[in-house]
Length: 265
Image (cartoon, rainbow, N blue to C red; front, side, top):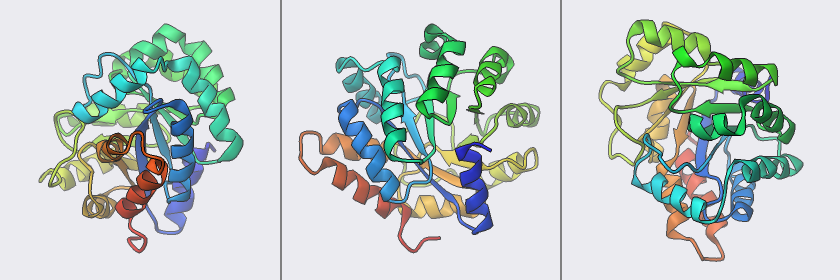
């Protein structure tokens, strides 16, 4: 059982749900990213999604795009992020998912990446623009190294595609809450509950919901219907607003704790 699978199993046995923050690796620096991961762990994160900066982030809204641009200007690329993973694992056992687009992973070499990611202590890999129909070499390489392969499923996916994505994903299934790119929203999509009920009919695997989850009430609402809530843009925005300040890490950790809610589960 991987750290991700073990985490969801423990949460289920205690009738709790997962809080999954996303941050972009290297924003504003890799040293700060390490401190942020450790602080988010202490703030109550159950799993961390660590974004790989990519020059054409088509699924990301302006907040994460700006974070990606800052990281790329810092010269942050996949090899350095893999080294960061090893540093995280020296100090924390929190599950970490490498969240990327497929191009950087393919360019690095799938077999080489899988071995390096597993050795560094990553637990899963998500290639956000990779379709399940084209994922055989990716899933084989990752699973051969003991890594989970997490796929996105959208409200617009047909029941047949939901079933296929659910069968291909392991560790958990990432349900996109709405159509469009990442970014803060005032309200959750009106049809989210129906979407998740349909998705649940195709899988017993944990389902985590992301895209537009940006307030404590969103997290609590998602927990009513799914196994985990992913929060990205609002946390990345909190990083952005405090770049250069000595208490950046503390502020972001406090924001994450507020999102999760100390008495919400």
